[in-house]
Length: 534
Image (cartoon, rainbow, N blue to C red):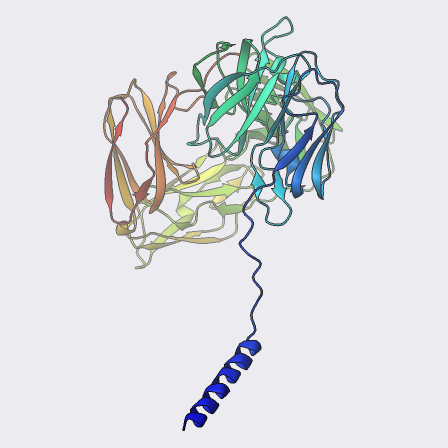
């Protein structure tokens, strides 16, 4: 019996041995590397003084690579000629080749942001900064502050903070043609900034959304923020900047012959008083009509009959501005009458059905229009042409959960060239009132009146607004469910719109205050919020 026990025990041990030998598995590589690259040597060393080298080498304990180095690297003060950074693939060192002649007695900093990562796991060595001075000491003063967008809740993307030294070379136009003495950058959603390694002195402080990445202010593209007064360094104060897209000065653009009988006059800036007059000699039966484009800053000039001139000469007068413009005429096709519904689909009780036309409209016959609801009942309406924007409005009272068919018979529209429309069919429908939400805003102690209260969506696109001169509750009805923000504009000049700022005029934008939280508007729900403005 004992021999049999020993026999079976021996067999069990042998079988377990072979089973374990037969098991397969993936070899373990150990824990994932989470340590960023370590700098082991820098030549010349960091915080080196009396710097006059043309090459800098930074050595690491492992293979590294550079990610988006052109976006991440910030050199302050900016170099006229960009430094050459190598290698662009992988290696155990970074070489910086300086192509500029550096200024005397100046501290330079190279902030690598998040560009240095290890080759395998891309662990990031964050915000490593290499600092040297061409003088015999390192400037060590700092300046702190924060940046906000004047119109939006947060600054967008990357914002560059810049300091210009106030010296014999300084003037207000320096930001258009000279790079700053010091820079740093912040990326959304961060708002706080810190400028380091500054020397003592007085400075102009500017924030720029620098679209060209050239450290120069280009009003056509860039947003800007500035302090009216200079800042003195050293300082313990923290400074707040609001960036904005300043309104461009008025300028008439080169007109374009856009169709056989159509000329387009584009412009920038304020042009509410812009008048276009023809100076060329034309036949006695020559007629023209002008309207403003509904979307862009342009005037449409239509004329008849076509003239065989090689060019037409116009005057453009806007206030004190007067320009003479020459339009080279081309061999183009005539435009035809083309009527389209602008907002067909779903109408809310606040909407008006609108039609656009490619050619200028001169007559609208409402007798040739019919509106029928889903119960085949005729709906009363009225209509008119908005000659300012060349659109046609159809006003009728809409009911909830209803659909409407609109028919426009031939001859309902007549355009400038006496063309008429073919039969037009379109349809719209409405939701149930319970599909919408509403919002009541109670203003608590606004600092001044009048104000503009705006409702904007999650992308800050304007949805509704109300201008109020006396404090009262603001009600926004028929809101499509979703997430919204409420903001208040202190309308200082009482022109019923938000006015931006201007750098050369030292004018700040009108102040905007956001309700502190995003609001969720739900269907069939009335929301009441108190906006504290103390």
